[in-house]
Length: 267
Image (cartoon, rainbow, N blue to C red; front, side, top):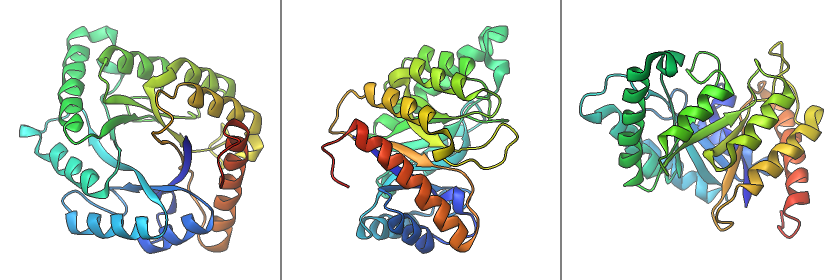
């Protein structure tokens, strides 16, 4: 079952209660809470309050998005464990982190091996909490091309380390769709950060056929239909009514496509 949610980082001008309200009004199923906007590391009291408020509104927490970078110095994994604790209190099944840059690729085998070993250790720590690590993509993140990102996640071979796929502006729409199809179950979550190749916001409906193909690929990789998989709307939203309207339109477009794939599911 695929559920549609909202990245709280897409609504940086709204507080947590406003985000919950607009997500519920748009018919969304879940929210990803962001470390850099709405809930920082160590804020366990805030995390518990958000978890309860989210559930009370009929929503679930899809993920906790962080600025943590795998491969960076973290003595005793204190920073990572603090973030993992927040994700656990939020009841988030996914913790999103970043990773090293392309310098860790085959050009420097030792650095790549070090990063893979680090991902293995982080994956083990997350597994103890039943939380999956999903490695974020995007310009400047270290995962700025599909080939490198997928090769690293595949080589990691860790059941709790996967990819947070998104439509990269450096690739064509067709290339992005093919990359998701090739990722199969290595893609643990989809971030629908729609934009034209020049960076301007783009609606889901403007690329409907591509999203129909992407959702079908994501659906076909399900290993257990009882477990929810998430597509999160991550594009920045305007303030006020305009932002709410664009969010509702994108949510409706995704729900319509999912109804084709999951016709028995009632929304």
